[in-house]
Image (cartoon, rainbow, N blue to C red):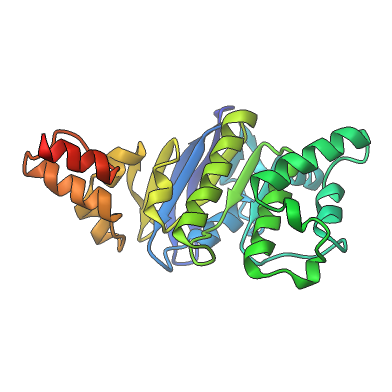
Amino acid sequence: MNNNCIEIIGLKYLNLFEDFSVAFEKEKFLTISGSNNCGKTSFIRIIDGQVPILNTILVYGKKYEDYTITEINTLIKSVIPLEFTKTQNTIEEELLYQISFNTKKEIKQKRLKEIAKQFKLTKFLTRTVDNLSDELLIRLQLALAFISSPKIVLIDDLSSYFSKKDLLDITNSIKEINKNEKITIIMITSQLECNLLSDYTYIISNGEIVLEGSPLEVLEKDNILNKAGLNLPFMMDLSVKLRDYDLIKQIELDMDRLVDTLWN
């Protein structure tokens, strides 16, 4: 048992996973990518306990089923887009409700402002939850997941709900929280650019991990990614091809720097 990892040992679930094992390192920002219908959302549901599977998941050295429901709800938060149950009237009330009742009012307000700013909710705090757009509702879900400072946050794929620019902005916010608060984050994403902001990346295909490592190491393996049904971001794909032809020595993701390198 490893006290510094979330371990999944020999997972078997429907026809998605067969004897699947992995260990996620504590306090890291980890991303998982895979094609549609590869079991990514089921994976989130399994880790956060929505799908009860005994003797398979160990969270920091302790079997999942040995935690109480209260302990799990404090330890792990998950975000599955648009799966949300309203408990309060406004965004502000929902966020404050998630902070411990024992917390002083001024500390609550400080935390509220921090998280609202991170997910660009500051000017919407008085908005009623019933009238939110899908984008705002998902931003609220993310804020709710982080506001109580859990140890682990699981995030299902957000790619279908945001523009590429907004998605990268949100991923940067998540990365900043991970860095400052040491929260273990496991994020599913089909937008491969988001992997570049993580500490470690996994590629899943046909119920198994076909690639893992640092984001650049993983994204350089374009042949394996293509077989897994994933397409490289344009700049990454271009850089890999230019490097393979010995036109550049290392992967470059900035277009201006790439042009300068080629001219020089």
